[in-house]
Image (cartoon, rainbow, N blue to C red; front, side, top):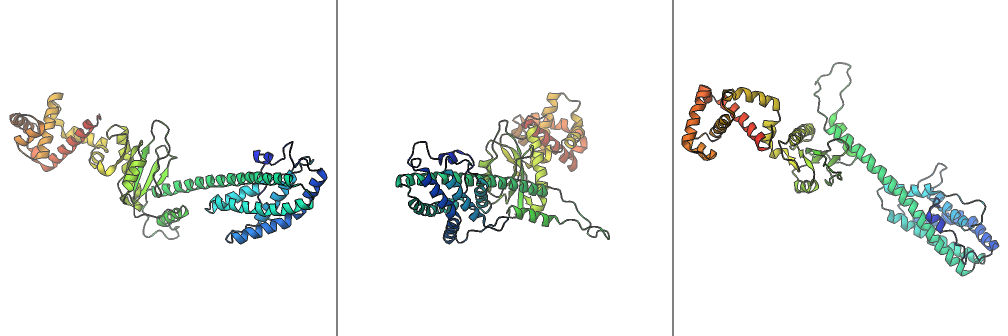
Length: 430
């Protein structure tokens, strides 16, 4: 039977009410019963533990600092505490020892067991204790109605002890969850650290560099994370309203402690994974980088961060978690903004002296011609204008760029900057 709850409702409920059959028992008989029970407590505790270990042979036996089994100490204290609690007029109130039974609950949690088996052990202990106490009640001439009340009090007392174990179980589970999150964040940090190449032949006497693969395997093993062959790294933007962490499923590493939460998705192309992530990410914005070999996780992170920056600038759609592999063109053309702007100024310099409207029409015609590689009819069909208008514009284009318009490298530059400008216009960018 577990220890006495500390001053909570369960402890008070075990005290006899003002008018009861137990209180009607003469105090001399109550004290005689209590004396017999206290003397019997050590042997009774041993009998209870022996029976519990017979029913549960795999129950670990943890010793306290004195070398005595903690379970035996807890059972004995629980019996003594319960008996003392019945002496309502005793000068010294019984001291409670909830830490023992909280420790039982912690042990169940730390070993990955549920509280069901522990509660079954408690009930077994109470049944055995009650049989012995009933015998002692007969020897002390306690009337049956009073013993019935004592039995009810015993089960109320048991509820209090269970409460203590539940508290210990919950505390241990919370600590375990916190420790796992800490270890998981350290694993994510290591995964997303850029690999630094070390010389094949370090200088004589220099310490050997740490092995990243070994460190990664050790950290992954501590949280039971199987190392995948490929991963994709995601970066999330927090919703305007407070939101719970997305239920990304088992195996996905999620770090919600950073300003922009990060996640590492193992085997991102595995069956069912994309659909699971899509449902889990409802209401979130962000991006998931391309799948890469595990050692290259930092590269996937870089692309995800680049995509998120484009989302923040309004150049990629918000309100969903994008996959970089579906927006390759935008990432390639829009992400190096300064380089594209400089190339655009140089490549489109011939349009600088045209009016804004005319320059826009000429640029649209040039891009349509570069993309179709066709004649006036094909370009006209794409632009929705008359072929003769296209012929006129193409003659102007040749006048503006001259022979350079036939140079493959120059045409490539022009198509690149014009496609980048169209992407910006499509998403309302500057």
